[in-house]
Image 1: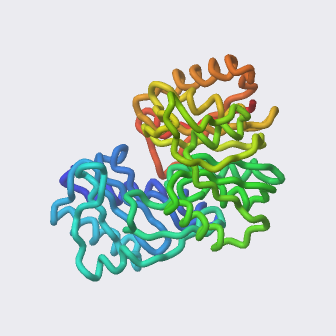
Image 2: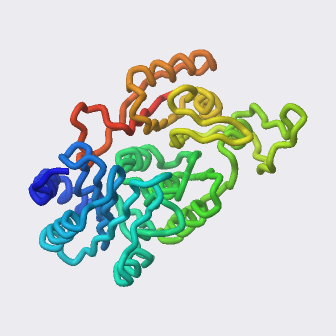
Image 3: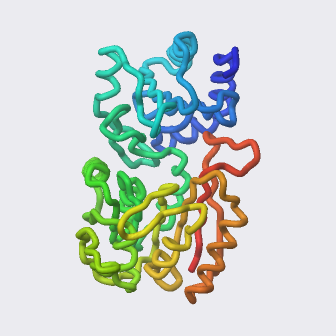
Length: 338
């Protein structure tokens, strides 16, 4: 990490001045103020979530001096916003550093923030490991809000349902959020309650493969090779105007394997078939090893094979608080007209 951390933090904040002004005017008080990978301190990020600044380290912990420098800079540059540091440089990216009792109280205090006029819950520390809203997906949520009015949305790997809540706020007529984690869906339900939504959202606790296959009309067997699969909700075939697919890099269950490098098509095909003819499928891939061109080619070939060729493809780039040296950020988001 640079010996002049303060200079790096200052340059990053200055580079965002116009963006932050715009975001505030759009009723947004959550954004990245330091993106270390592209701004001189790999492994360090600092995000604003409403009234709290969240610093996270992924490669190595901060030294006592670096933490003091971080706190001193933001105390002056963004006064009134306490800073919580989560060190996630250990195994499994779990937060390991101990906070003072005062800091711990701030970290565990439930609060709220706003993005594009939509309210979300926040806690700097909770039972999980990731923040409850990924800020690099703001551009994708913005696009969903532009597309959603009068449409039905299937939000897969919904996590805390940010995409689904944003779509409902923007006038979607029907929203289904699917995730396997009850705790994530519980936060999603809280997010829905924070907003005066014109519709009631549906929350489905299910393995993604089981849900997608059923919505796509492919069906989901209850036994495989003589073995009973875990219970799953039975869902009627249904096509959605808009499908949002944001899988983790790798996950394995009794129903299938999510692998963004080797087999995105395993998820893509049923998601495509669950999309209405003439509808829109938005796909995310956050594995830095995957090139944009190769991934797009893979999806286009898979779509042709499924008999639903891609009519139009548009890239949705992260906004300016997530800069990239090579214009090829780890998070790749594709909007496909199918």
